[in-house]
Length: 388
Image 1 (cartoon, helix red, strand yellow):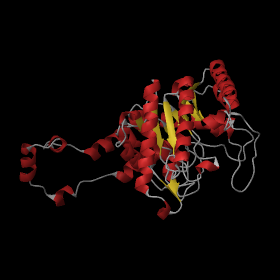
Image 2: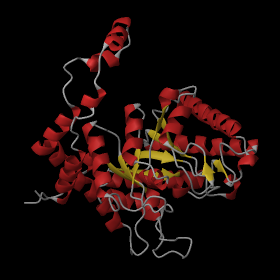
Image 3: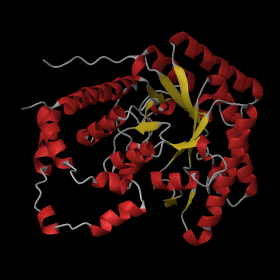
Image 4: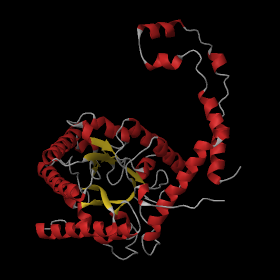
């Protein structure tokens, strides 16, 4: 008998408020759904038992809002949080929509634009801390180039680093209990975007003044748009101890930014990422950054779909991790190590180097070992499809 799916706040699911605020507009047609304010989005998510939300500053108050208007919006957000039990898990700054950022924010040639971007981020960092956010995200939507000769990438990365260092110092000075997260994206809307992958982001983080304060939040669709493997990108960040947030959705490779519901395109890939997060006890929010189909009258079926899809895949993870046939084949794949080579390769020493130099290997014999990948993949497929 199929198990019943049950979703609760303990699952730590979160949504960007922009997901449910999305009205279905695309480059070829106008909106298909009524407008929903950021406050209404927070309340609606909270009423449906969602654990948390993320927001951009411009989602809660219009650009250029004065102190009174901003304080009113913050008060309404706090009221919605208190009434429904939802919490603010992360926040970010919109540094991509206004034309002032048409050539980047932190990497703009114009120092005044960079200063304005940092000012805008500082202001919302303070609000995010007030709302209880423990993660602050930087997606460099316009940080890139359309004409490579027009911008020195070395100088651009230097500028990006300076802005992040400045904002880290601000968080420390204000004693906000918050870490930063870089969200990579390989392309769109610029022709080429800086910090395109998890590896790019990790490399920059290592050069910051406070690398311990900065992590990465990989997004599924961004990875697939570049034809890369979400499991590998998530795993690299997790292994580095830098997975502070995640953005889940679905995406057909090498397409425009589709932002479909999680698991909608490739359930096997989605299963393996859920397995990774489960096996390695990822404890952060599981955030969905996707949009309802343009055909939907409202966003709420989409919210339930994303959460139920993740929970359904979690049930499959339990089956994968307890399936005797699959586990036996995986154990056989790893094999025994009677000569202790794992220990030798784990740490260099003169003794280990000498043992390695003196070893006699028979590559032809080693090549004869059976590797049952076809059967392993087929068994995973059968578990996913619910057949024996």
